[in-house]
Amino acid sequence: MPAFVGRTEPLARLAAVHRSLTAPPGAVASGRPGLVLVTGEAGIGKTALLTRFAAEVASDGGTVVWGTCWDGDQAPAWWPWTRALRALLDQEPGLAAAAPPELAAIVPELTGDPPAEDADAEARMRVFDALARFLRRADVHGPLVVILDDLHWADQSTVDLLRFVAQQPLPGALMLVGAYRPDELPPGVGAGLADLATIAELVPLQGLSAGEVADLVRVVTGHAAREGWVPIVHARSGGHPFYARELCKLLASGGDATDVPAVVREVIGRRLARLSSGCAGVLDAAAVAGATLLPDVLAEVTGG
Image (tube, rainbow, N blue to C red; front, side, top):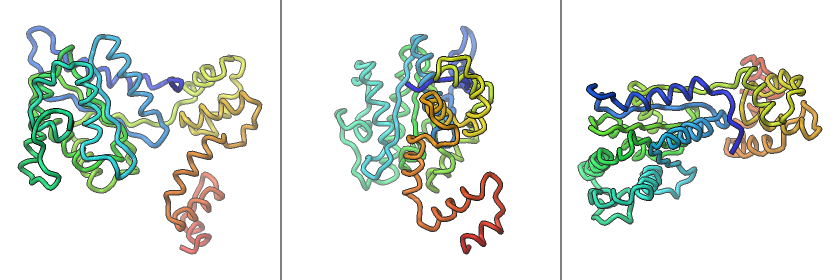
């Protein structure tokens, strides 16, 4: 697992929402699921943060289930929900007996008569309601945490289902956590998540601070004597955790700080390959221009 440093404040906010779902004796619970949306660019540490949060919840005896969206057209509708519910049923096999038949649309191995692929809105709503009713019974060991990662790759049904469950009054304690790259959202998915953002605890992740980069250098290299690398790594990476970690490894192996680590080049190359030639040309020109971009000069260089 990649080194986890910093992120004290985002982790505390996740933990606070989780604690709020456990009403003390005599108190009245809110009745609605807790909802957190974690956002940030690729490699900024969303999954690492949620992995640490999930580990802390599990260490306290809580239940966490996880579903990750798939980058491709092959994934069926509701795929991250399918993964999360399968994980829940693996942990709590006794819940299968209480599963409404409509849930077979999400978890096909459950017995039931799922709606057809071209089912109307009423049939879809019955599936949504079936999941909400099922989750009411699933807070076996305190608040159930459902994490849906990489929602920028979600299908519309996944986000619609999240919106429905997040706004239902549920007697049980349920925490929903979504994570996504806000700059890579398809229009329909983006509109649905924007609607959810009005009722969610928003946790946007930015680059690591210089102090957090110093912690990362110590974790990756194991040598406090290499504090001199901190300003170099922080300046070159902008605090981006993935870039900073790989740059630390490069320096530890004797590489030059002006080089871009090979694995970073590969990741950037894969993302650039998805772009149109025109867009890639603009990025090439922008990269040569440096950190300060002048739109008129960039337009002249690219012929735009």
